[in-house]
Length: 172
Image (cartoon, rainbow, N blue to C red):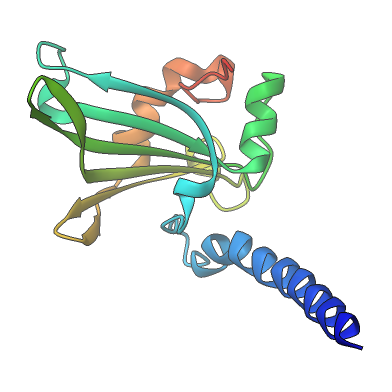
């Protein structure tokens, strides 16, 4: 009889995981019904697309120096892999972390910013279907930095029109 109890627990765990996982996947979208891009909780567990390090001497080091990590939800990863336009619901995250140097090593420092692109042509028609946000991180507090996505974000991303306004490419 004990095995029946464990089977029941296993079935419950799978069902709960499906329900809670689905809820978590839609949480960012649901909380952003006000027209803003929501902070993508748990993005660090999404698909890792690439990383680079911007070192001193780079022309944008003052603003973008440090570790850059790009993450994608499943919809965004599928589009990247197929080199196609991104579907509604695709989300890309750019994480900027500082650098710590000690004893001839470089390690990741604290998170400085989290940039988010969310594809939803119905909510973001004025920015080619993409919602943009840049969350500045300081002392565990995040603050929205985008006040005009068309000027602050799309003006640079327009150069990537042929890749649906996305800089990152899939290279795994």
